[in-house]
Length: 68
Image 1: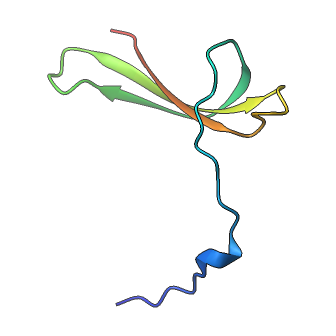
Image 2: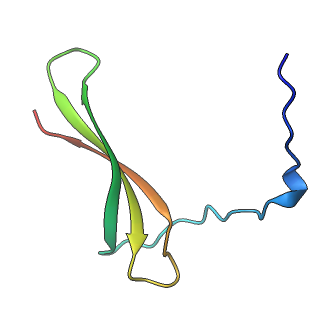
């Protein structure tokens, strides 16, 4: 078994409050192309880092867009 040198008390708790509906600026930091479970469709999965709004700067958002 691996020995992990991790102490949770050394890290700040993160907030997972919902982001209000609206338009936000962001930067795509990761994208992945995938196939739907039944094999009939294609989607792009995006990981976006929000910018331009001090209340939500650097919050990560994941979205999945079906393109076929």
